[in-house]
Image (cartoon, rainbow over all chains, first blue to last red; front, side, top):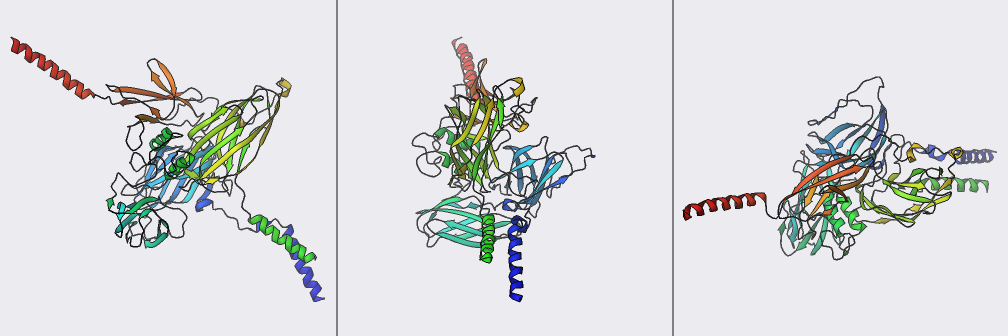
Length: 302
Length: 294
């Protein structure tokens, strides 16, 4: 009797699970990719507003309420300058606080899908990779994007390191954060470090055991997916210092440490032409094709 | 037996919900139009939230039924074109990039990212029939610094083209109308012209680079001043230096023929300073020689 009763309970349970819409069992997840949170606040339609985009000092808080608008909040590096581009045109910049957090807002005129691009520049002038936020903007709403994060900036002191010598890697991140640094060649070497209170980090690595050849170094926050720029260096016969003219960014033919329309245009000149120079052939396959443009697009900074 | 069946169905329910949505490219447009009407076809990519930065797409259409009249990228995400959408026979080829890459569109009305709008293709209905649009090719590259190729599934589009009697008049939804912002009175955004000097590294000639956007109707073309004419050009533009400095003027036109102008002075092979010094030298020399001869 009891067995029959339990059998009926189990069967009923299984039946309910089958009939019940499964997606309801998932926890409602309002977080989008990369944990950026998008929310909308309805503004008071009776309020008359005058949109005033503000270029603010540290710890910016914008004080206007436009009828259509977008707000960006997140973390960069202490006292970094955050640049906002709309459809590839720079329109706004703010300075992050000493804690690395920033906040900026923008009025819009139309309902539309708008491509916003943000990048951060640390106090030494080194830039993060671009972060794009295509946003569907609606009339009567301020669309707020929060939890924006940039990977740390990164520079190396040498473009070529003599076999067995040292390489210094440095940059800026959020203060007092655990970082994971990776050097990849034939083998991948991982290093752990923590950023200082001012957000700076620096690691000098003896490249003992590193075979001669090309390597790529990058850094990220521990347990985060967003990677910094990949910087190339060689382990060779002599040391060659990196100066402001040579940070070895793929596709940076004019060596200004920025990947922008000018570099794109140089690649476009060589598109489908034979024997391209090394600096445009970003993947070294002797042709300039969509793959080279894709690599350039990854490193785009302005 | 019933219990086993229920368990199987229960497990399958979990499996189907945990399978990720496949990456796909699609086309969206009207269902019906009349001969003579113009409309947009939106190419869109669902990247399943994978960040992508490059597209290489070929769309096939029926040129007996349709005329390709151009494209718009003012409210889509691919704006940096290696090859702008252009028709060759029954195929429209296009290659472009999104600097920095995107994973989808953030929309506060949706929990997940929306599809990536790639470009709007513009067509005019020419003859009655069933117009089919198919993807001949759709190579999408990942934003991973390596150019990894992704091959999404491809979805077709069918549009019925009807006769053009008044009784058959269709209403094209706003989102697929061309020139839906009827009065675009605003010119494109201001822009600068950059001069890129020839270098041994890039091995290009001297060239100028220019780019801007137009929020309302999109950029139609660029023109360069050539005496009293304006010639259509595109960026980058190879430019030769003259002996003397010269001014280059470029206009960016939107699809309502509003324009914004920018200019740059290209240094000559001989600068103005040198010319002035030479003239001064010649004048002074002439004066000195005259005095000596007297």
